[in-house]
Amino acid sequence: MKILIIDNEPDLRKVLRQLLVLSGTPDLQIEEAEGVQTGLQAIRNFVPDIVFLDIEMNDGTGFDLLQQIGQSDFQLIVTTAHDSYAIRAFKFSAIDFLLKPIDPDDLQTSLQKAMDNLHKNDLKLQLQVLMHQISSSTDGNKKIVLNDKRNTYFVKLSDILYCEAESTYTKFHFLTENTIVVSKNLKEYDEMLEPYGFIRTHHSYLVNAHKIKLLDKKDGGMLILEGGSQVPVSQRKKDVIKDWLEKN
Image (tube, rainbow, N blue to C red):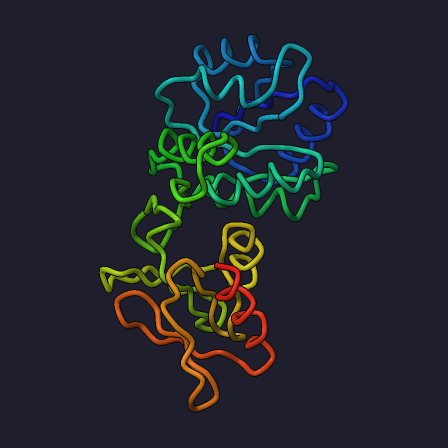
């Protein structure tokens, strides 16, 4: 297993190296780089399986490096200080990230996930979604990466009708009547999608408010969406829905 650590702080590289050694990963080879240019060179020469990439470095950012790597098959794990906007971008792209200081348990989880996904070559498309997310493009054109057990999907937010909780999973519904079931809970997508016009109408439903056609007040309250889909509205969410409909 070939792992590359790109970080401008020697102490952090040392700690991460020690944690990786302690992880018990077999046949482990670790290389280090301190910035964008040395990182690019190491990617080309070392050809890593997994890259741990810092965001803020002396000669640029991790985003600068990602824009220059071209076709690459490695698994990417971003290491970053807490930044809610950047973290939301990573979540949209399904690119894994670790918050500094790095927790050993979180590292083990990310490492295992990366090793399980070594056969997937989705990084290029994931990076497109990431850069799209942090650009000034309109909300309607933004995409999110959704992974089920077999496939990776790159979905426009404007194509999503609503999300439905299924235990610890989330089912995405679309106008095409296709569905995608993702192994993340609805609360996580609520936090991600709320800034883009998605409304929690019920403890089990998150709706793309732009797809609402009307609020049927009978039988406790029901939203009618484009295509005729019906989604329940809880009593405490009725005023939120009414306010949104009146303003839009």
